[in-house]
Amino acid sequence: MFSFLRQRSTPPQSTQIDLDGVRVAVAVKVSKRARSFRLSLPASGPLLTLPETARWSDAEAFLHRHRHWLAARLPRASQARRLEAGASVPLRGQPHLVVPTGRLRGRVEIDETDAGRVLLVPGEPAHQPRRLYDWLKSEALADLEEQSELHARRLGVAVKAITLRSQSSRWGSCSSSGNINYNWRLILAPPHVLDYVAAHEVAHLVEMNHSAAFWATVERTLPDMARGKAWLKAHGRDLMAWQAPGSAP
Image (tube, rainbow, N blue to C red; front, top):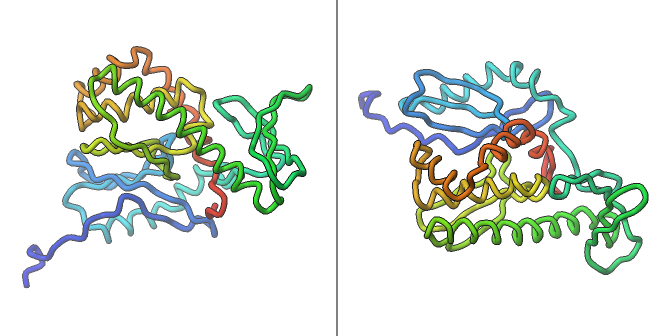
């Protein structure tokens, strides 16, 4: 069989690379405009861009050859931040110290002390990170449902379902059927940033692309969209460093 008749394997949406013993997720993007492979480091995390006609094996080889470039620009210290006692978690953009309550039962609560805001987390020490993670996701879901519904009303569309995920390089995604996935870490960003991502994803129900018409739609429902977009560009990588319990750094 002639080589040009062989079926090309479809590139994955993301891959992983070992950087000095640390597994790092790299998002994969296929671009009609790309003429060569490109490895970049946007705020959302490492991104490998490849042309439509490229072979995935060649893309993997390119990524491997440039692993030292990536390692030099992605310090280990910023790759893993844990939801654990003593951590300062930026709930809605405001630092909150994680403090165990010493009680086995109860729910996570917010309190104000002389030293600042705290998150009071019950449960056995081994279970506290999961307790906090589940609570943060419930807070994120409530905020995202509210803002998504707000922008859906403004744009005259309907959101079918909202799901939270722990993507390593994306803040959200939207399907034409009305299903939206959001990154749980958005609850760690200031409210105007979460609002921007909600407006962005709901706008995809009007324009399933990133054309000028799409950005005009985002701006129609959120006139100050540039504020949230700029914040993510500047600080998104730090936010992505927060890890769900049980995930590898």
